[in-house]
Amino acid sequence: MKKNILLMVALLLSTAAIAKNLKTVVFTTLPQMHCENCEQKIKKNIRFVKGVKEIKTDISQQTVTITYDADKTNPEAIIEGFQRINYDARQLESGETVKQDAEEQCDNM
Image: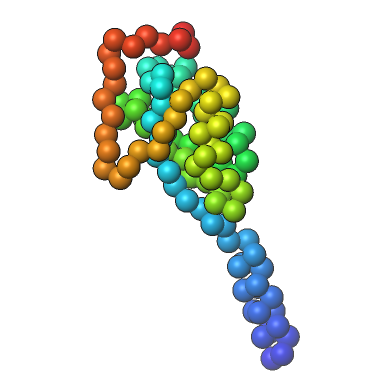
């Protein structure tokens, strides 16, 4: 009986240690994303920012949604990651939308 209780306590403690402080933030970029090459450039490079767990891009909405471990990084560090690949990024407010600029040209072709 004691072994079972100790085992359950150990299991609970190990689960708590593994739990991550995951947060999600939505960015838009300048220059804007225009094609799959733009998306891939962002995904391939931002994944190296420490703590980034998942990256989703949406060209039609002009958004980059990033899930990250808040114990390892923050939105400011992620923005610096964008700057290293020549993108200016800003965090979108809840409900904010961005329209694609049809006149802007893609540099990643």
